[in-house]
Length: 186
Image (cartoon, rainbow, N blue to C red; front, side, top):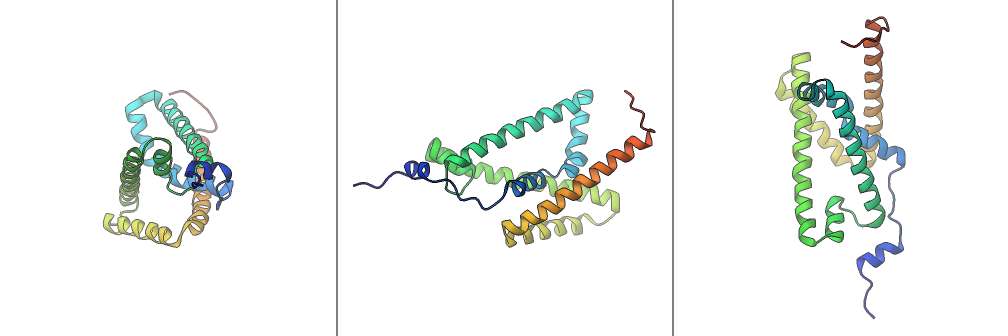
């Protein structure tokens, strides 16, 4: 008798979960880095979209949420590790899976580098610290978290995302307070 195919094996068992729902939420939030995103990409969104900026940001957020739902549904079907690569490999073709995997690696690297450069630029101009020290410090810290694994990275993501939420909430309150709680349309 022949062995069952991978798809038949995957249908019979649920993927083993190592992270809780709360861990995933905070990892996603840490990956988005809302405070840094507003400092770097938020400004560009308002420069390019003008008064349509808030709507463009909301639409972008909705698209990311839809993408997250797709990944979530695919993760229920495939029990093997590999993320986008696995989904494309088993649901489309081996070649598309291979190309998707390499494109995702390229995307992840450029996305991470954009955050490092954005943070370095902001910290250099705000605090006056050498960009080399800031950039190498950020790369060093993130490398340590990558080496320590998912559990430590998750705990860091919870702390960092909570801190970012607190800072953004405080800034929002201070900005509204500076207008004496008067909302106006410039």
